[in-house]
Length: 274
Ligand SMILES: [Cu+2]
Image 1: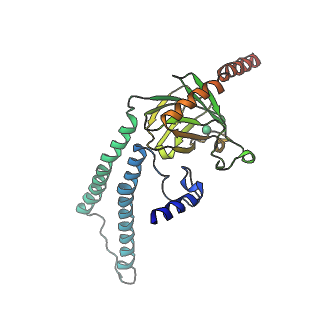
Image 2: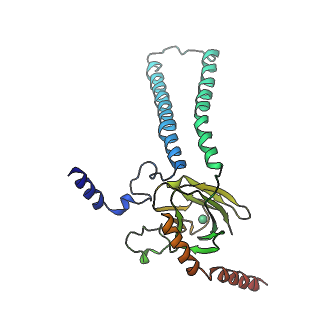
Image 3: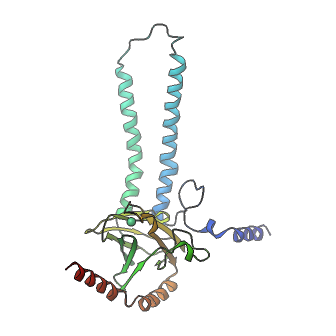
C-alpha cells in the first residue's frame, strides 16, 4: 500500500524534478550518473565542505575573541608583542597538513578521470560558434546539434538545454569523448557525468565517462565563446544497448548526407575567400 502511494506520488512529480538538468533554487550538484561524478560529490561533501566549514568557524571565533578580549576599553596599554616563533610554526604547518590530507583523495579522483579505460564507443565533439558538431568515427556518423528555439520547444524539452540532434550513448559502457573546436575556445561539460573539458582549436582533448543509468542528460558550453555562448547546449540520451543500435541504424540514414553538405559548405567558403 505504502509502496503504491509512494509510486503514485513519484509519478505525479513534474518531470523536471526527475530530469538531469539544473533546477530552480538548486543547491549542490546535479544527481550523479557516473562513478567519476559520485567520487567528485563524495570529495566535496565529505572532504572539502567539513574542512572549509571548520576553518571558517575557527577563524570567525578567533576574530570575535580578539575583538572582545582585546578591545580598547579593556586594554588601556596595548601589547607590543610582534613575534612568536611557536605560533608561527603552527600556523604554517597546520595548513600544510590540511592540504596534504586533502591532496590524497583529490589526486585519486583526478587520475581516475585522466586515465581512459578501453573505450566501447568513441565520440568526437567539435565546438563551433555557436553549436556542437558530433562525429562517431567508428560508425561513420557525423551531424550538427543546434539548440531548439524557445518558440519551438515541445513538452518536456527544457529551455536553453534541448537540442535538435542529441547524442546517444549506451548505458554502462565506456564512452571516450574527443573534444576540439573549430573557431574559438569552447568547453564540453556534462555535470551529471562529472565531465568538463576545454575545446581548443587545433588540439584534441580527451575524456571519458561511463553512465550508470539511462535517461536524458543536459550540459552546456562552459567556456565564454562569444555572443551566443549561452545557446549551445549539450543533450545526451543514455539508452540500452538495443536502443543504441537502433539509433545507429537510423542515424546512418538520417545523417547520410551531412558530411558532403559540410564539405560543400567549406569549399564554398573557400571559394568566397579566394
Ligand atoms: Cu561555446
